[in-house]
Length: 494
Image (cartoon, rainbow, N blue to C red; front, side, top):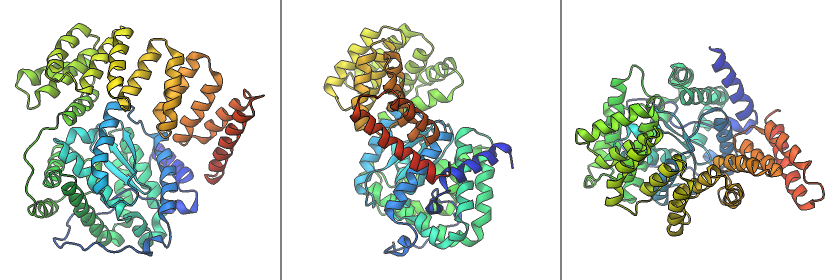
C-alpha cells in the first residue's frame, strides 16, 4: 500500500468515520454483479427496516461531513457555467424523482475521467469528464437519474443493515479510492476501489444486483416523467462499454457500476415500452461539453487547433466547435481573432446568455474592463438571478479594482448561496484587496468549514474575534460560529 494511499485512508477514517454513526456512509453501487437478472424488481416498502441504524436526518448530517472531507482533498470545478448547467439539469429531473427531499448537493470534481457517484444525504458527485463521455444531454441525464435512484431507495442504509460488521473499513477504502481517482489518472484509485470490492464482494452480490436494478428502473421512470428519452440509458451504457474497450483500464465509474451486455439489453428492453424521443441536439449541453474539452487539452493552442479542425471538417456540432474555438483563442490571448470567431454565434443567437458571457470574457481577458462590465450588467438586468452572471460580475469587478462593490455583491450572495465554497473564496480575496481584514477572516473561516478544514477555520475565527471589540453583535455571531467549529473538531477527534 503506497504512502499516499495510507495517508488518505487515515484521513478518511479520522475525518469521516470517527463518529460511530458514520459507519453508514457509502458511495453508490459499490459491489455489483455484472450479470443482472432480467426479472423486474418490485420496489419494496422500506418502512423502518433501514431506519434501525440510521435515519434520513442522520444521513444528511453524515453526508455533509463526507462532502467536506471530499472537498478538502479533491480539486473541484469553480466554473459557474458548468455548475449552473448541471444544477439546471437536476432541477428538471428532481420533481419527478422518488426522493422525499428534492434538494441535492452537487460536487463537481475537476477531472477528465468518466465518473459519478452518490452519497447518503442527497449528495451527488460528477467528474467533469462525464460530460465528455456522454454524447447527448439525455445520456448525461440518464446517469444523474440513476444516481438519484440509489438515493431515493436509501440503498446505503439498507446495505448497512446487511453489512454492518464490515462497513467502516469498506467506507474508508472507498473514500480513499474516490479521492485518488479524482486527483490523478493513476492506477492507485482503481486499486483502492477494487481492493475494497474484493474484501466484501462474496457476501454482497445479490443485494447489490437488486440495488442496481432498482436504480436503473427508477432512473428510467424519472427520465420518462421528465420528458427525456428513456432509451438514453442504454445508449450511455454502450458508450461506457466502448470506453472500457478503448482504455487500458476501466473508467472508475465502471468499477462501481459494472455494465455488461446483459445490462445493456435489460435497459434496451425496458425502454422499448416507450417511444424514442426524436433526436435533438441540446446546444447548451454541447457548449458545456466544449468547455470541458477545452480544459482537457494540454494548452489552449492545442485546443484551438482541435476545434478549428472540427469546423473545417464540418463538425457534427458546429456551433459548439466554434464556441470551443473562441474559448481557446481567448485563453491564448488572441482577442481580436476570438471576437471575429464569436460574431457568427452572436448574430445567430444574440440572446443566449452563454454567448454574452463569452463576449464579456474576451473583453475582461483583454483588460477592457468597462466594456466587459457593460455587457455583464446589461445581461444582469434581464437575468438578475443568473448564477454565472453574478459570479462573472464579481470576478470582473475584482479584476477591475472595484473592490467594495464586488465585496457588497458577494456578501449579499453568500447569504443566498451559503454552501458555495467558491463564493466564500472570492469574498475572502476581495475583502483582502479592499482592506477589510475582519471580512477576510470571516469569509476564510466559512471557506475552510465547507472544506472540512476545521483547525484552520478555528484560527480564522479566533483572529476575527480580536477585531470585534466593541461590537457585541458581531462578537456574538463569531463566538457562535466558533462553538460550532470546535464541536465539529471534537466529534472528529481533533
